[in-house]
Amino acid sequence: MNIELLKKLTECFSPSGREDRIRDIIKAEVEPYVTDVWTDALGNLICHKKGPGKKLMMAAHMDEIGFMVTHIEDSGFLRFVNVGGISAYNCINRAVVFENGTVGVISYENKEKAASAGLSQMYIDIGAKDKAEAEEKVEIGSMAGYKGELSLMGELATSKTMDDRVGCFVLIEAIKAAKESPNELFAVFTVQEEVGLRGAKTSAFAVEPDMGFAIDVSMTGDTPESSFASLSLGKGPGIKLKDASFIINPAARDFAIKAARVAEIPYQLEAAAYGGTDAGAINLTRGGVPAGTISVPTRYIHSPQEVVSLSDVENSITLVTKMIETAI
Ligand code: CO
Ligand code: ZN
Image (cartoon, rainbow, N blue to C red; front, side, top):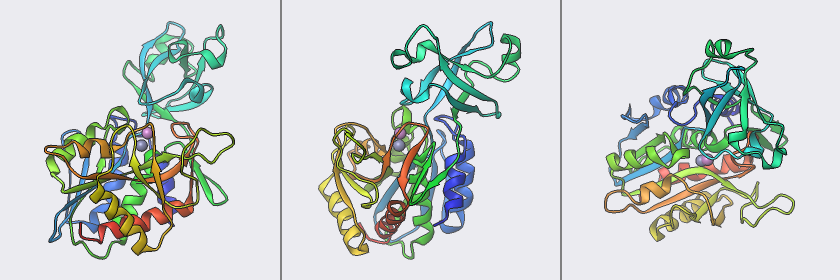
């Protein structure tokens, strides 16, 4: 497996709305393998591979959750809002990095217990002694993401942005591996999923797919006393039947399950109470599009240390490759 590429993708800075850097990396990887590539007005990277059949859209989101500066205190500390699903307990005393490389630490007003502090009682410390010094590095609207590296834990790997750079990785590697293209393939690396599936909404409208899948992370239920979730690490990709954003279309379900069986990989069926993926937006495009989601099982989603199994990643690549090679 190309761990170096997964490392490069997960360590890249690209919160929602600032996907330029990750898009450049992905474009360079995919361009030699497709017919044409373009970037739309919102910033989605659309990779098109000609084929004789119907239009298949495969989507993986490029953006990551992050932070935006709303106010700079006279003391040089920054106040911020979340961009996407940031929980307070996941970000206290964590390092973040801004687009220009400025590093900060998020902490909270000491009058609260950490557990009850909300984001409005929190701040980013960038080591500035006053407002003027802080303004040399950041301004209102500057965005930060978690700072971190990819680390291996035996067969598992952890990084800040498995959501959804691991999905981008799976789609990139599947595009490279696919030997045939019976469908008209549109591999779309979407923007702004974390703030409401926005890039998938506009790109699916433009592409008009006959069927679409998101490739994204999904929560596991395999840690001590975890809340109920059917996925476990190491048992293969999930075929997600439902979350808060969509219910899989039977044609999409059958297509994905058949591809997994033909590819002879393990897979897990999954029905989730919460969450959403780009499939939710694709599904509701124009007159409606049969849509589903392929999940990479992931622990600690939306924390700075999301954990996946490398065998699941490998099997996800095999599954998505087989889907690309199969006429819908
Ligand atoms: Co997410
Ligand atoms: Zn995601």
